[in-house]
Length: 366
Image (cartoon, rainbow, N blue to C red; front, top):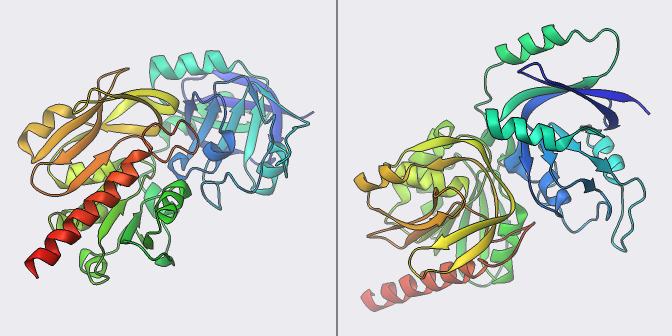
């Protein structure tokens, strides 16, 4: 069994057992609290550039299957677990986690104290780290200096957004989905409702989107800081008031910035499938799936045309907004789940209903 090191930028060193790829890898270490759904997390584009720690101690016991991917190419930089199952048992299992990560050239480490690592992240915030082989040539001081000198990534969305538009046909409402790093669960929910979807890159101009005469526009999730996506902010700003919109996660943040709100970096983010969110309009609380490191400043909404609709019950941060004048609403969490509870899946139905109402108004004016 090969030994591997996880070295943090504060000088903390974890020694564990290697699995997956043999290469060294550097990224931001984050943790997610889901008890299941590791395959969806591995393949979630929102984890681009990050070394993902699973807080639940046993990972891989049902293996990897063909159905639960959220993207074709995983974007994580590394995978950290307490204990990795070597012989998964599930009728859908096609590969072990070890075999899958090896095939995708992604390194992993097991056998470390993931509780200690999580406590470090919770107290110090997300930290840069490197996964590397445990050999005599490793100079921890040099690696720590390298990590501290490495600038933060700012091109997340460019790396995970498609290079060209592509269709996902249906016979219902025509939806343009702006892909900032989309989880395919979003596309599945739209297709399930028979939407005729055109998926477009993050930097597609507003006039090109409107030329397709969509009934609605979906703003997808994605990785990183919303301020690093000025093209997306400009596109969304030029679409406001033209067509109904629904935004999720990064899409929610980009829409809010396009309306004049401000964003900020959370200390250690919200990642997992057990986050309670309250709908301020109904008083209903949903348990939600989340994966984000930034949030919208609630105080900054006062100078905009946005109304706060949802808050996180753990830390009272913004979890949803609605435009006061136009048929647009967004949420910070993931109503498509994948993984996680499906409490808020009804938001996709609200989006369909919103498009139908607006189409009805158009017929009345015709």
